[in-house]
Structure formats: C-alpha cells, structure tokens
Image 1 (cartoon, rainbow, N blue to C red):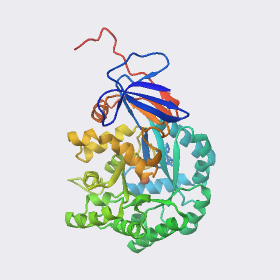
Image 2: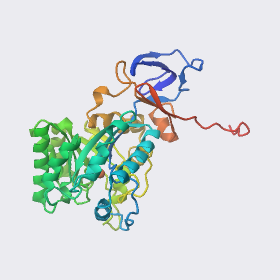
Image 3: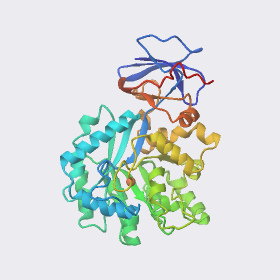
Length: 415
Ligand code: FE2
C-alpha cells in the first residue's frame, strides 16, 4: 500500500508513506504535490494521523436511551436508577447486537482503539460475557480493552467484591470503581484501596470513575493518586471524570497537583457527557462540571477526551464522532487558543493511547502497525475548523472505510 500527498501532524510539506506486511515501511517527504495514479491512495493534502482512540465508553449500555424510560432530571443518579431497571432485561443477543452496531459507528468515524467499561454489578455478568465473546470478531476492526466497572458500587452492593473477582475470569483487562457512589466516604476510600490491591495482585490496569459529582468535598482522587504513587503504578492508572475538581478551591487544587504529578496517573474527561450531567443541582450560575483539562495538560500530565455514552440512560445523543466531542471539550475548557488548537488532536489520539498503555505500538512510525486515518483538513487546526469527515481508516494495511469528500457542483462558484 502506498499513500501520497499526505500531510502529517507537526510537519510541513507532503509525504509518501508505504506499508507492507501490515506495518509502516517508509515515510518520505515529497518536494511538492505529486501526480496520482490508480494504485495509490491520494490523500490530496489531507491529514494522515494515527487512528482516533476512544478511552472511555460504556458499550453494554449503548443504544438503550428511553428503555424503560427517559432520564427526566438529566442527572447521573437518575441514569443509574434507569440502568438498574434496563440491566435486568439484558440478554446475550441484545448486548451483542447493540455493541456491533456501535462498533460500526466508531469504525466509520476513524476509531480503532477502544476501552469499554462494563457493569459487573450483575450476578450473571451477562454483558461482560457477551462482549468478551465478541473479541475475536472485533479484532480486525478495533482493539478492545474491557474494564470491570461496578456501576452500583463494590462495598455498597451485595457480593460486590466477589463479583469483581469473578469478572477477572472473563477477559477483564482493567479494574474499575465508583467511590463517589459508595454509601459512605469510608466505603469509597476502602473501595479504591481494595481495587488497587487487586490490580497489583493480578497485574491489571486501573480506571476508576473518580469524583464524578459536583461535590467539592468528593476527594477520592487524592486516595487513588496516593495508592498509585506508593505502588509505583501511576502510568497504569486512570482517573476518569474527576468533575469535582471543577469545584475544588484553588488552594486545595494547587496542593493536589503536586501529588497528581508525582503519581503519573492518566486522566480521562468526557466533556459532552459532563456538561450534560453536571451542574444539575445548581440554579445560576450553573457550573460546567468538567475537570481542569487545560491545567492538567499544562502541568505536563496526560489527559484525553472520551465519549462515555452513545444514546443511553445518561446521555440521549452521541454518534461515534470523537471530533464532535473534541470540539465541545475545547469550547467548554477555554481551549480555543491557537497554541491549544495546534495540538488539539492529541486529546483524541496519542494521549488516549498513553492512557490505554498502547503507545509502544501506536503512531505513524516505520516498523509500527500500519494503522491510520486520513481526515479532512491539512493540520489539527483545519481539521477542527472544518469538522470534516474521516476519508480513510486503514488497519494493518487493510482499508476499513473510505469515502469521498463532497464536490461542489460546477455551477456553484462563489469565490
Ligand atoms: Fe463512564
């Protein structure tokens, strides 16, 4: 496979890239645009970059919005109540059908790496078993990491610790948690410490829904970061959401950042989901309820964006387009400065790959797997301005999707 006239991130000029045996073989700068032919993929000056990474989604709940009822309050807590009612209706077929439909949406929007949380507060582990059974079928399209996610708590749910341990027998890569939802602060602290011990014992990654609430007193992040630091596991640990950080006082946050930096943990923010679910108990002014993405990035820590939901009890819209999430997050986090825009794709590419611990096999470099997308626009800024389409998604040298950019009718000539 040969790609010509490609722009690459953080580079000027045009490039020719060749792939063989599923790997990148060569990357050569061109002296200018070159003539196309039938045997090549002509990027036509559009950006070729590593595939988008979806580091936080709940595939078990996708496409269930309105079942059995719609979330009227728009709160996280009503979402959890509705999901508990939908969860008892899950079947192997129901889960697999919705997951496959969603993976199609992700693939057609350039995503090739996915971390899914799956609710394991279900005595039969229906969703976990159904999604784990799809791994082989999905492998040609996406890498899948599975998080055992205790939606209704570990310490506060009957047999919560046993269910978590059982789930490890069913293909779990990552251990999750939800300390801010546990009955008490003490249960929350206990749950984080128990998760970290379990992950260390079984050599698993960790990704905790941490402080996903507007309560400025929700401070499980410091517990997680301390355990990560003391166990020297930081790069394998992720704090998802951390929306309470939006409401922390600056003096506490300043002190907290010292620990966070030392711990080396990763952060996932879900800006569309958080701006929808948080601030629901405010009158005016209403908080945005999104963690301090810009400050985390500026402090040199790893932070990425994710969708969280696609049409489920928590969030009624969503369609697999991470560019939409990125655009929304950049707006909500005051990150439309030119410097921010120039590297903005990091938030849905390499930063997500670091969170997933796959950076060693991710990126357009000779010898790495030939996984890439071509997206409309010549660089990060143009891609975000245009909000265009993914024109190609290629995995190990095989084309997963291709589409043509729109062409103006020749009678439309305004410039
Ligand atoms: Fe989530």
